[in-house]
Amino acid sequence: MTRLCIGTIFFSAVIMLVTTYGNASLDEGLVFYLDFDNVKAQTIIDVSDNGLDASIIENTKIVKGKYGDAIHITNNGQDCVNIPAQEKLKVVDEITMTAWVYYQET
Image (cartoon, rainbow, N blue to C red; front, side, top):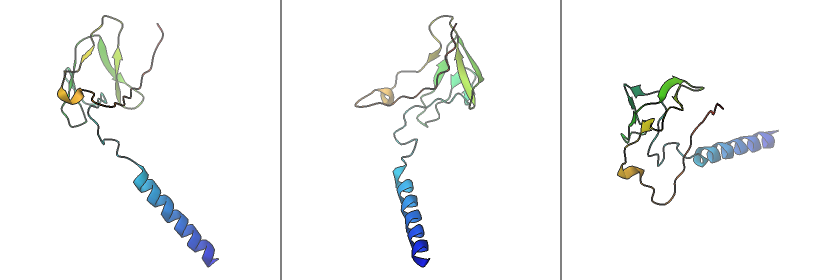
């Protein structure tokens, strides 16, 4: 019985150690992040702390999304959001981009 308890404790400690060191921080190397929950007037605040805020031009609405707010882009024209060119946004080696998109057929 004691051997089983020691084995269980050891196994649990190893699992906790692996999960602690196996997770990278979500904001490690993060350059730009818009969550659309921080919109002031016509400015979408970049929550990555890099200050790369975007401007709402036209053809968009801020709406309730599945998790927080979202942006609804209409079919009226091309321009909707402007992200100013910045040195921090230049891709040098690799890039990972993620977007959650809900597409409604027209």
